[in-house]
Length: 99
Image: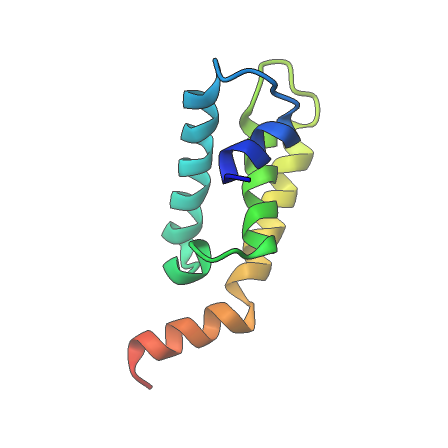
């Protein structure tokens, strides 16, 4: 299943009419994680933490009267911190620096 399909499933979206919006949130989540230092190779791998972070980000952003937005945003930020401190991310950064 494609990432957008997984995210739509988690958002309970059953139509393709909102694909552009959902994809924009996916792209924003990936950009944000790369911006703060999560390695690109980790972001493009099939990592469950990355996928969970994207789901949390999308759930925080999607919809108008989202009473759970703050909880999902906090969850997203915690997961990103875990990714930043993960051995996979640290190893990738060290490998890129040549040390």
